[in-house]
Image 1 (tube, rainbow, N blue to C red):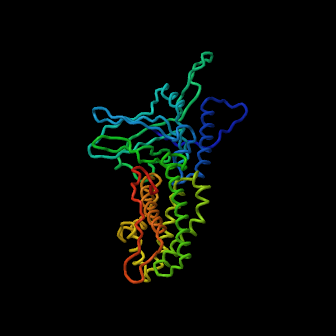
Image 2 (cartoon, rainbow, N blue to C red):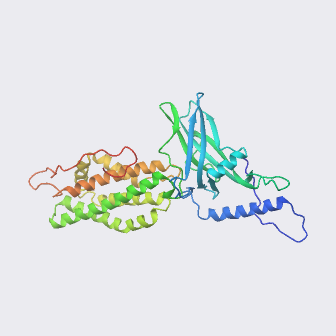
Image 3 (tube, rainbow, N blue to C red):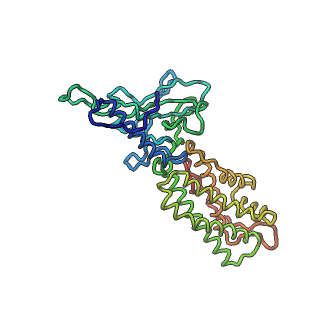
Length: 386
């Protein structure tokens, strides 16, 4: 697909000038360019992608894959509503797809599998300046013509080695990922295309609900732990550090849960992920203030409840707060978020179940109550304990 540089200036209309269709096309291109510039003002590398979908489909994209006996991948795009990094809108639905197919433009791409590769990405390109005539001609009109035009769309399949973590261009968007599973190619069910809103993809909606429940439970557990320490007048070092940790967490949650409920539901996914990263930073800072004054004992106490060693516990915290958010690889951020939320929820849940936090006064044995309900975590995306 060739993308030519278009004149963005408006047509100078004057009385008596000779006009033809090129003048109107030039005017249309100018209008498209100005619309595109307007869209670009609100587009950034962390908020472009699939548009919110409130239809019965529940997702802004529908893509299917098949493989023939010659190991050739065939990808068909059925539906897609998105905006690219360059501000170009994509609107492919049942009606537009049928119109394009009638004009000979089928949104399908085939790719011969190369043995050296095991991952491929499906790239969709839009060019609004290439006009595809569509629709049935009016029998009463002379000369006959297709009454409307649509933008040109094109599908490509590229191996992972040929793409980067950023989109390949401003008129392009990565809409799918193909992986080899047991030697056979299939659509990666965990891949989430770049999304403009949490409402753009079912996995993000599921994640939002899971994180919301996690934050509510963390708030409740923190409150109960603080109340228990005060009510039982616990003053040992471990109880004091637990009090400091839960107070900091509760203070942070009190300032963020409302924004999460009101704003993050419709915001880009980076905002939702940032809530978890910020919470991880609060927890790590609350522990680090006790370096040299009991942090090691407290971490050993905490990790004893989570069936983790201290290093693994701190690694989860560090991986969370040092997370690199990549809008074109949302799944990686969600996996790290899931690891963090399940670990923290397990920890705070067990601390909440204790009648006493700390060591017995006459021994070095930690006080435990064996009240933990060992249940399996959901095999699919999960941010909570069952």
